[in-house]
Image 1: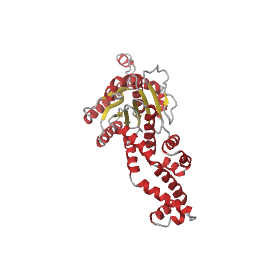
Image 2: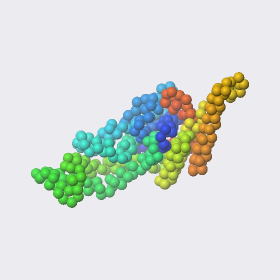
Image 3: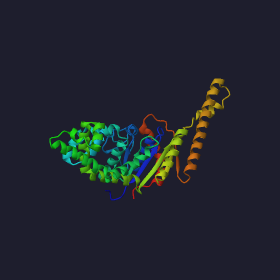
Image 4: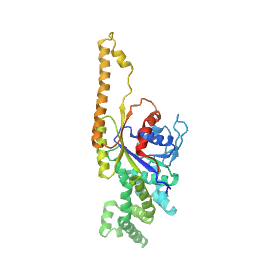
Length: 369
């Protein structure tokens, strides 16, 4: 555990609002300001690597953004892929003699593919371990692009409740009974003739019951390590050092997503520290006023210029309305309007946004301590 609890910034928003570039710009701003900063994405679409312009994997790695000078602090990034990250999590949780069998268990593969929230849970656990190892002062988390992304902060706590309850013990005993039946020379089918065992056997079959039994028996034996990791992740995501940033775009749909997230944070007893409206200001077209003032233009060209001017005015009014509605929903929350950055490389967008994000948001988000 770090000597000083890191500041944790959780960025949430709907799809297509620039949440990943905002998260990366925030992390870069903290690193420029001299902080040891860890940037994490829970987004399985893996947009963060594009935003930073560098390869990132399931273990924290130092990041040097092309064209960025020396940082006063440090910046590292973590982008867990469930299939790469799960073996790492298994190494953290299970005893050495259990690891190979757990990795080879077919039920583990099924959990990765089917169980809702498993990617977020793995990410949360790896964040907790990375904080323990690297001791960052700031952790910036880019959540998945969804209205329900904020639920990510609750996953570790729910796992702790499960592990502290009786379900894992019961499953472990169930697995032990199945193994004992097999050791006595009987078949697992004989075990599956009684009560709950019969229902499970009928629903899933012998092979699945055997694999699940072995997995739950290993989990019951190692649940202390997993519970400790999950509890630490929950403390980071929901503790007093956590801050939440909601990111929106200029569209009505993104504003509705932001409104939902604000309400969800409130329902969870959490406070939004800042609102970001991306692409709020389009770059001005300096040629437009000069061209429109000319008297020698064809009617067709003048019509096209009027359309461009009308689009710019409509966009400005839409952003103004979006910001007004957000202010009504969160009157005491600072709102930062970011420009629409015209750049081909995502890393160039991150660098440009960092200059706007740093001075405006960092005072509201704070740093470690």
